[in-house]
Length: 212
Image 1 (cartoon, helix red, strand yellow):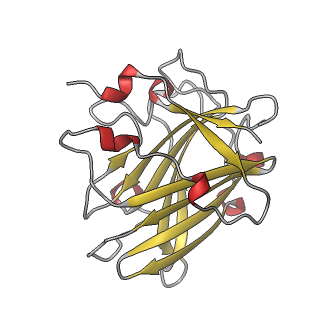
Image 2 (cartoon, rainbow, N blue to C red):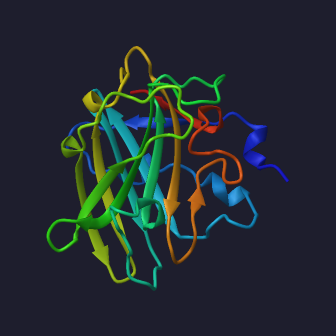
């Protein structure tokens, strides 16, 4: 059975967030994956918030109701707890292989620092990409996390200058997809999910419309 998300082209508003804004419910994306009922779609309770300004993207992941401790390893990012983000700064929907404007990043609430207690980020190549983006300086990404016994909040600022093709005035639409990864509940996919190539085919991603 194919995903119900294939019946639609999704475009979501991405609200303007001035520098210093703490994202709240007004920036929340709907949980499209709740439409789906298939094996492999996780049931992790989470909220995903996202905004933009001329200097980049801000997003927050809020996870709750966890019973197990976090497991985050920069050496094994795709097996860790966290969130994988896919972006296409040109939002091209008629290609099935990623261009140089496509980015794939994986963020974890912990796993960095001498005590492995700081948030971490890893750039991941997109399988079968025609080209990769310019080298991303991960040190320019700002992150902070708050971890509790039952979950975490991860806040990220992704500077536009490290994203190939980020020009929100001229190109206000972004191709966008994410996967919330959790070893306890399983993975939660924003739109398309396996066995479809959700993290490599930009035609399967939704659209974020950056407007003021």
